[in-house]
Length: 150
Image 1: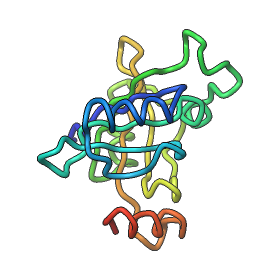
Image 2: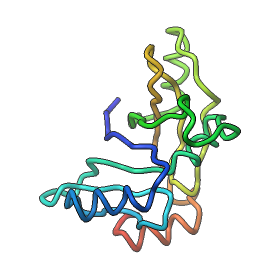
Image 3: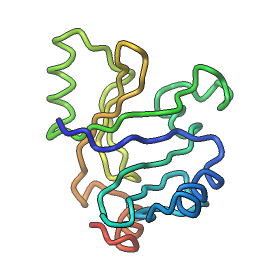
Image 4: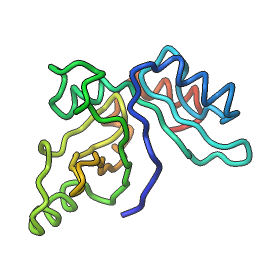
């Protein structure tokens, strides 16, 4: 496993996007203030150091979409961990008693296969592997070309 970056799950996406871009001076590596996802790097490097995601969009993935986005129980932070094989990692962790929020699934619009779990303190963790381009959505592939990816 490789810890990738923190992702803030935000209610005020555009305002938060502008804060990290304009005030903090992070370089946008993906997305724009009208999106629901964006990633940033510091000025010197191209590696993602921080990502933003609309809180309500993540709530839909983990089954909390019926709750208001400002509810105390809505997640505000998620650790992102890349793994070689999501399904094999889930299976291994389940043998150790880890409970997952849902079965692993493909997200073609995000170019990943992922599974979600919580640490003992309740923090949300995403395990993911990249999808091959043939399993990605056309919208993702267009965005990847725009931002210099796939």
